Image (cartoon, rainbow, N blue to C red; front, side):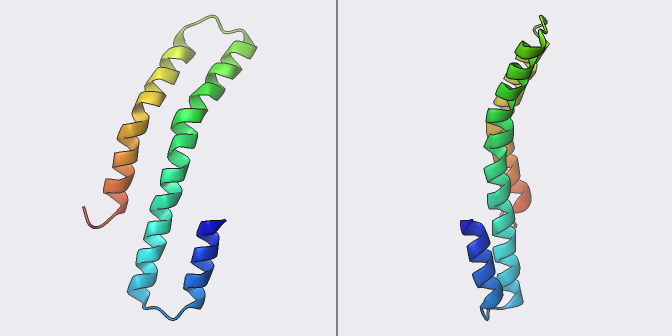
Length: 87
């Protein structure tokens, strides 16, 4: 909600095109950083929950969950490095 409000104010304001593009890029990075923990920290627990409800006796869902959780810090750095021009 806050990001949408800021974006709406920026579109109404009289700022240069370059600054407007920088704000859009920052919003993109913030959105990706918001989705990162949702996918890589909370998502694996959904996998474990579904696997336990479906009666899977294999250790594969547990191993997949471990891998996804450990990718989280690396993915956060990759988001910043690939979506900002300063680096």
